[in-house]
Amino acid sequence: MIATLVQLLLLAATLVLAFYFLTNRRKARAKAGVKLGFVLFIVAAVWAVLRPDDLTVLANWLGVDRGTDLLLYVLVVAFLFTTMSTWIRFREQELRYARLARAVALQSPVLPVLSDAEGDRAGR
Image 1 (tube, rainbow, N blue to C red):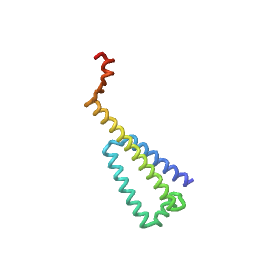
Image 2: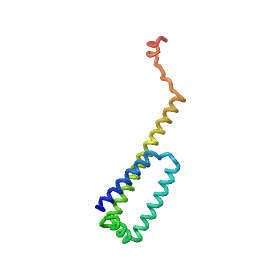
Image 3: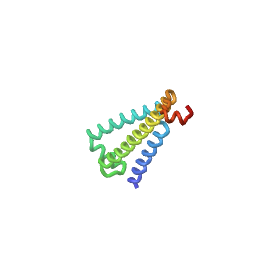
Image 4: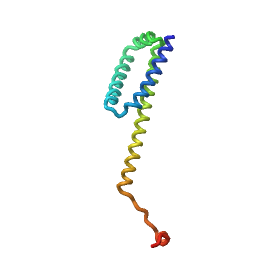
């Protein structure tokens, strides 16, 4: 029963991250939230390294058998977060490049050069 609670929390965290990235990507508050989350993740990582028994106690409190299992679950969510962030960033970058290419193409069009044979057919 409690292990199911942990699974539900992990699934909810994943869905919240997905929703967060898909809706708030360009806002400054979203970027600040990512930075704050990263700092909290670093603090938690240092804490887990310095006091691994506390991680096991926390895992037992959440219904997970070992602290290493809890750490694995958290790392899976962090990996999904990073993967989604990178995918969205690359998608936005590709859109910017496409818009830039269109703007450059419209500003300086290059007219095709007709050869003599093509010019004769065109009525020259």
